[in-house]
Length: 491
Image 1 (cartoon, rainbow, N blue to C red):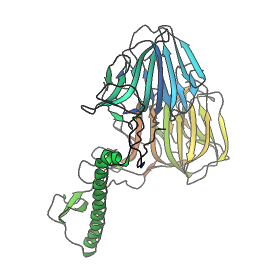
Image 2: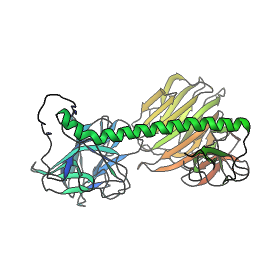
Image 3: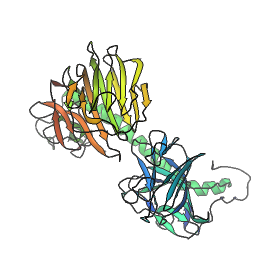
Image 4: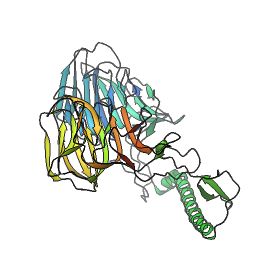
């Protein structure tokens, strides 16, 4: 680990940093960090790409490669694995959130992925000659990666180093990118996102005088920042007291832009002048005419039938709370096109233990009891099912089946090949989301009611309002986002 050693008294010289031999005008960085949409085209189609890389896991897929076909790319997922191909052994277990050395090798007939001591190899027919992209997928740059790259070395089939990319910042304009010490080329972002500079590489051992001169601007800026923070905190305390005073004495609001019948928030400017701003009450960015709710009360024998068919390599999230348990078993969610075992199901037995079905011949049945009036989060993520409550895992299981006998999902019920069963329970539904195998959000259900007071779930993807397919939905409390100005209306 590189450390900056400050204030060493008695040293009369500075030892220069040990860093890559870069030309004048560039500063070496420990890493560059990509936003989604940012990428670099290496210009190389075939070779061995050795990455020193660390991913940020946010629930989306992280893809890098030279093509969209099987084994022309690799990815890091939130399921503690590096995926290489769709074959049964096409992944390597590991934690992408850690810093790893990952080798991806590809030619026209074969590709391989190595992480640590584990290697996966897959044959293919890759004759497209597409070049390898860092942080994105050539052929579909919509799919990108969120990661820190410490270095990339590329070797040809004779194991000769043909590219050595070092994280740098160009001093003339502050541009962040990768410098190739082999060709002398500076690679910059070719996508829509941005690159963020990591810490400057290397160490410096310097005199007190050197450090005082070198870091004087930093100290000045830090002191200015501290003074600004103190001022903001003081003003906030004063404004809070002023608002309380105004509320206590029922002061009439100024004649400003606060529409009649609306709620407004009082803020004082630096001169002490009060201003009123409209409070935006429409949560989640719902369209006009819809009011966001904390949850929808799906009562016993009520359900919502969706048109979304999940896949074994996709993702589903359900945030719900149990309210009533029947004397028989049932389903909180599910869809299958044939009898057991089939499809994707979260259900419960008559003894209140829960069950998972995940496109597999092996049903998972827990020994843990579901409890009433308890909030749970269920996730299905690329063959891994998990149920949690209060941050604790109630049960989890990894399935090995393929996408067999799936059917459109029903919520608070099981769609059994077109027939609804198991909808005897009652739940509060807070949210329901589905992603496809490419990581695209295909359904995002938000609890809401329309202007007529009808309760349902608004899908922000299809922009449609879905009401109870059968039974009764009741409204939970309205959700209010307190924001300043009409621009404060985000999901």
